[in-house]
Length: 490
Ligand SMILES: NC(=O)c1ccc[n+]([C@@H]2O[C@H](COP(=O)([O-])OP(=O)(O)OC[C@H]3O[C@@H](n4cnc5c(N)ncnc54)[C@H](O)[C@@H]3O)[C@@H](O)[C@H]2O)c1
Ligand SMILES: O=C[C@H](O)CS(=O)(=O)O
Image 1 (cartoon, rainbow, N blue to C red):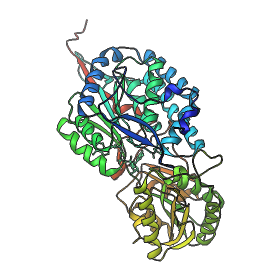
Image 2 (image 1 turned 120 degrees about the vertical axis):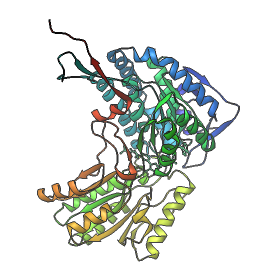
Image 3 (image 1 turned 180 degrees about the vertical axis):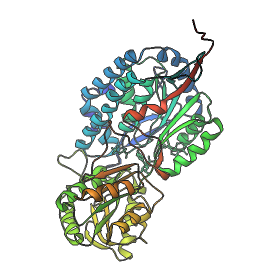
Image 4 (image 1 turned 180 degrees about the horizontal axis):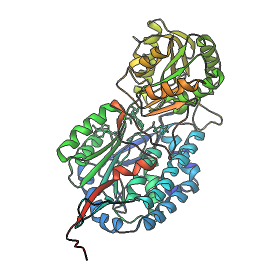
């Protein structure tokens, strides 16, 4: 059976076993990993269960003291070897990703670099976990603050960024001195297992980095074990708000520290004073990356009436020219959606918008397989499903507005608060709107905001905590106050 993975330069990166306690492990049952573009089976991987999760937690806990007791510099050395190995295997990691997730190969290569950037960023951040001394209130006492690794950490990750959503969690955990148990999405385990192979080559001790593979049903069982375990002191989840709510509820009995990166409903506002061509370019970047399957993709475009027709016309022209096809084809810019449910949701949002008066400017149809034509719909209205639900596909509904206050109110009218974007060249407006938008992240005159150096995360029902930046290691640390008494004057 020939698959895109027959051409790996390093075939040892294609794993069909999970990774626990430094060993490749199997299970009685397996599940298929399929290419979303063709339906072809790429591999079978173990369908692990709660017992395997218990074993991984025990292995991580066993390995923790020695990893914790290394110096931050010693931990950084291992992380930097892992970083180098990830970059050295960019082509294979990209092929694995495009095969199991479907994104264009160029985007996959970009994600490899993005994923690696969290590893070298946090290798260094781990060496700057500073404590404090505090001016004392009592001459017989001295006050100090230590920051110490929280302990065994669990990570549950989504399919849309199979590498970066893992390293964005495990890099700070490992740098802080914590072992990790990872449960990747059932759609994209191969990327996670390749990361484990490279982690082993980098010299991570057994038990420090564990990857559990499971299908949808067993993922629920494994999630319950990770949430219930008192040994797991931190759970980091990236995925839908619905599942984040379930995990939060399951973690309550053990009072676990939580990092949640959840759903979005990003607005993209274009004011009359904007550079419209720049806004169109920003819209393409912020809407159609990964076929619109990113949590920070624009879900709603709001364009002021003075530039509305110019913007929608120019946007539709650019969108119509996007190359759609299999992610492995050269120059493809928009590739497959992840599954039939995703296709159905996108089609329903388009049909609902057109039924409610939307004006189709380009796209609006399923091409072949799970390729949905990049779409622009003008004259969108707030009663449409795409105004309230995350479409998670290549569809741009464009709403009209008249005043700045109206744009802010429309943009904020959602339970989500992850990413937002606006275009304006008025400095006063930039500060007014930037401060008024209820989102964790605001792109001003740009459609691309994500980088390891900056705090990534949302407010309201888009999540808790931040990933990346110097903030991103805080969730993997505990603050300990030492009060040294009995200090007598000479
Ligand atoms: N905020 C972010 O950084 C970010 C990043 C990527 C995706 N997302 C969001 O994720 C959603 C799409 O990704 P998805 O379909 O993989 O999300 P999902 O929530 O369905 O699944 C995410 C992960 O959770 C696991 N899971 C699902 N149900 C579970 C349960 N009951 N118990 C334990 N684990 C469970 C899955 O196996 C997968 O590993 C979108 O809403 C998107 O906005 C957010
Ligand atoms: O979809 C989730 C990712 O966090 C998007 S990004 O690559 O970090 O912008």
